[in-house]
Image (tube, rainbow, N blue to C red; front, side):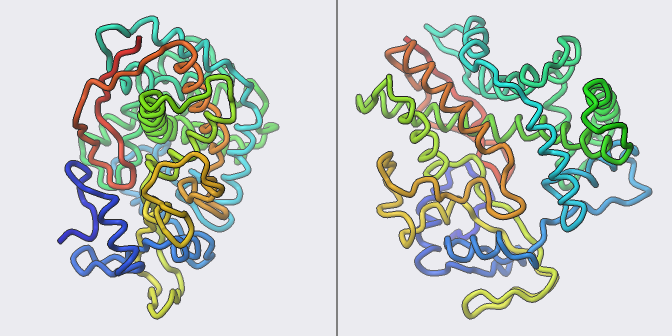
Length: 375
């Protein structure tokens, strides 16, 4: 009997989560030598515990990664703690405050013009991988040449986050990170985002690149799952096309019921007591956010997709505390606008697949291909 999911294909994750929530809300996996927290109570406690640190990358000075790649990994807000995290978060906030509002409708319309909406197209490749990064680049006012480079090389850039990089990975990453750094540096300096301070400049550059990385996976996953939710509502004719709040609720409930991010990890820097268990200093715990979102102690009838649930927004998909996702409101707005555009321009969203396969990442559940047509 599987307790810890190691492959999304053919895995009934909701059944596993429901069983663990009932029988083992905090579970030690002896094979993986890791704690796994399932319940909302324990997941929330760990996310807010200052003694539960985000695992930081171990960077060997003799590693074949180049200096810019090492700098990027050391400065990213999502994988830093303490003073470094506070400084990186401030840098990330500077970036978000610089993003201007962009019409998602216009960007989406241009993307769909290139697709065979009648006979079928892959939503992942045509929209999900492109819309988030385009919204960011247009909102920041990037030049067309730099935008083209970023879009073309984003799939290679995200390999920088792989925990175990091969020689092939490093050889591909190094020159791409150098170019990304140069593009981001030119942007930060030309817009005077750092006020001429070298250390601040580095922080903003690295976290701007980090934002590009997050667009590729998190944004992609949310757009796929929100589309599936919208298609179900259209099939059931449970839709008020003129109610903007409906689309926000749709995305919010999707984030609870079918989130792209399923888990995150923490390392105990001191002993942490949860219930009758003690996570000892140095031990790692997997926080299963997607299981916490199905906890019946918090969400009534949690396995039901229910838009009128009063506390849908209490889901933990974006985290809590200092490491909560800065991009959450931008992400929700982008996905809600996408759903509204589709509902107002097409009568039907037809899913042309009965089964899906998923990317090999274990912290995110990402559909590889989503063939649809629109009519």
